[in-house]
Image (cartoon, rainbow, N blue to C red; front, side):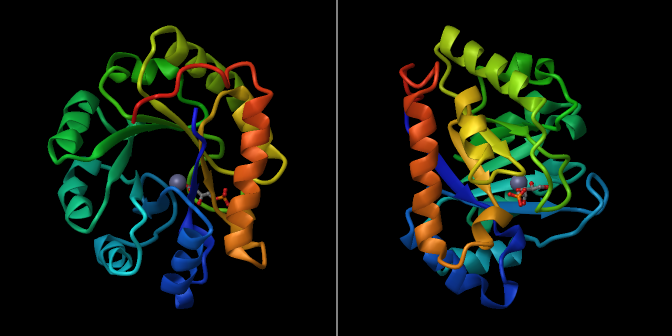
Length: 234
Ligand code: DX5
Ligand code: ZN
């Protein structure tokens, strides 16, 4: 099983965004997590495809695009064209979730589905064999710097159990409030793909911080109940 670290640039210094992304890449990040907010599904606004396309010029890191927007199907093509490698949509805003997942995959991208803390796992039940990634939000989306919601750990454990039992090739991503303490809790419960925002950018040395987070996660994996299960192939 491989741990994946995806820094979220939401709390980066946007005046020096390109340089900071280069440091994250040098530190060994696996993906760059890009939080797209529309002011409707979540009460905040961030950035759109032009910023993603600019970042595409400065890094080879795969882009993990997290769409916190209503009608995400309207934005899939433009984020794919801007350089997205993986696109995650929220189940809460997708009445035609199966179709949206197929649209993402038809562009050759990895498809992810995100669930808010209060959304039950049942929301992904019938697309679980179709997706590459399930994102279990550990905060209510909208801002960086919020507190990790412990109650989601039960959902993480349930999903990890299911992935193991059915030998699914699905990454289990967590996002929100991951810091040096909670990263161990999330991995112990079953997460293998960690989004880290403010806790990373609070550190003085971004390169070093990425590898310290990875080390902490790998330690937790080594002693976890599920760490010896088969790695997923994606
Ligand atoms: C929350 C975003 C997260 C957030 C993570 O709405 O989806 O990606 O930026 O930031 P931290 O790690 O500060 O919670
Ligand atoms: Zn996110």
